[in-house]
Every structure is written in C-alpha cells, then in structure tokens.
Amino acid sequence: MSKRSRTPRRLLMAAATISVLTLALTACGSGTGSGHGSTMPGMDHGKTPSPSASADAMASMPGMDTAATGNGLSAARDGYRMTSSTAGLPADRSADFRFTVTGPDGKPVTDFTVDQTKRMHFYAVRTDLTGFQHLHPTMAKNGTWTAPLAALRPGSWRLYTSFTPATGSGKGKDFVLSRTVKVSGMPMTTSLPKASGTATVDGYTIAVKGDLMAGTARRLTATVTKNGKPVTDLQPYLETYAHLTAFHQGDLSFAHLHPEARADGDHGGPALTFHAEFAQSGNWRLFLQFQTGGRLHTAALTLHVN
Image (cartoon, rainbow, N blue to C red; front, side, top):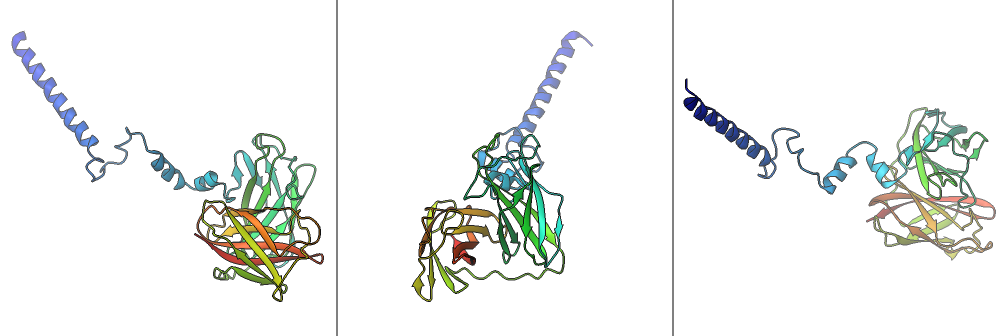
C-alpha cells in the first residue's frame, strides 16, 4: 500500500477516536446538570463541592457534629481528652469514678482555671434525664480526678466534665467533655415530664420565663417562691444565688447557662437571671440548684426551646 493511501486512513481513525471521547465526556458532564443524577458513583468528582454539601457530609460522619458544635457529647476536643478505664458502675450504692484529662501532648493536665469557685465541675446524667448529680471532684498530684457519685439507678449514664485549662494551647477556653457508663441491673425507663415553666422542690416553687430561640443568646429568668411569697433569703452557691444546667432531650447535648450577677450576702432572690444560649430547638431538661438555710435544693423542669 502507498504512503498516499495510508495517510487518509490514519486521519480518519484519529477523527473517529476524538469523536467517541467527546461524546463520552459530554455524557459524563451532563449527568447532574440534566436533573436525573449520575448513574455511576463518583462521576462528578471533578467538581468542587459547595460549602453546604461539605458541611452535610461532615455532619453525617459519626462524631463530626459533636466536634463542630462543642455540645459536650465527645470525650475529646481540640487535643484534650477525658480518659477513664471505668466502663461500668454498680447500682444503688455510692461509687467513685476516676478519670484524667489529657492535653494535646498526651500528658495529664494539672493546671486549671477556677470557675465559680471550682477547678472542675462534674455531672452525671441518666439517658432518660430522670437522674442528675452535680459534683466537684478532687485531683491527685498525677492528674487523676475522683468524683464521688451517690447511688445510681440501673441504666446508661453520661458523665460530663467541665473545665478551663490555665496553660497550654487551650488556655482560657471552656471545655465540656463526656463519656458514657453502664450501671448494672435492669434499667427502667421513665418518661420525661411534659414541658412546663414551673417546678416544685422541698416546698419551693420555681417559675422560669424567657423568649428562647435555638442558636440565639437570650435572657432567662427563674423566680423562687414559697407558699406564694417571694423568697429573698437565697444563700451564695458557687459565687451566685443559683446554678443552672440544661441537657437536650434525645441526644443529651449540654448547655451551661451563666448567671448574670454574683452573690452579695444572704439575701438573694426572688428573681434570678441567666445568659441562655441553646444550640438546638426541642425540649431541654433544666436543673436549677439553690441554697437556703445551709441546704442545697435541686429543682428539675422541662422547657421547650423554639
């Protein structure tokens, strides 16, 4: 065959190959744009994902929502970790829970900032929100903390530690880390009381008011009365006249609601105001602690956040 006859054939074969490639690329590029979606997984990998798509993908990964919002449902955040060898606790009797907070270098953290008179606040909450303890553990020289828990009912409990490092990369930053433990025995689940703005404890009535909205800082006011009369003899408790903590029904997200004023003598009440910011809507279980006559009272109520 002559060179003149071979050349057109090669040109025709090259043109045919280019045409086939063009059709294939056009089909791949039109998969998502046509509204039908790509039938082959991963075919739109050439596109840059939008910020919202990336956020949705991260939220669907286990633990990513916790890391993003800092809602206290993770044992680790920003290099700090709550560690413990205890996975279970006995039922119906007191028990010590020991744990350590390690820093980004993996070593126990031993220097903490004092917050409301304490270097560490510790909470034990039953998954159905019908059990609650607020403790102040003690730390050994090696960084091991011991929380003396009162008797716990059988079931699953989440244990939270709230602290602020005084040194290191997390200096001045508030952390809330948590772990779950199983309490031995047959668990009996109790339904959470319906949302209500009032609660009673030890003869005291607490009324909570506030135009609350998820993700927005609002003022929340709790008023304490007894036999219909305003209570004005609240004693200082952790530098204030009341301590308020909240947990979200369902996932147990943590919200620490800060008081707007410090205690000044044994004449607090009847109204107590808090800086309230709830990360998500739904029902939250609030635990309000206050002291009178040297006795600590804990009132629990369910509050709905829009």
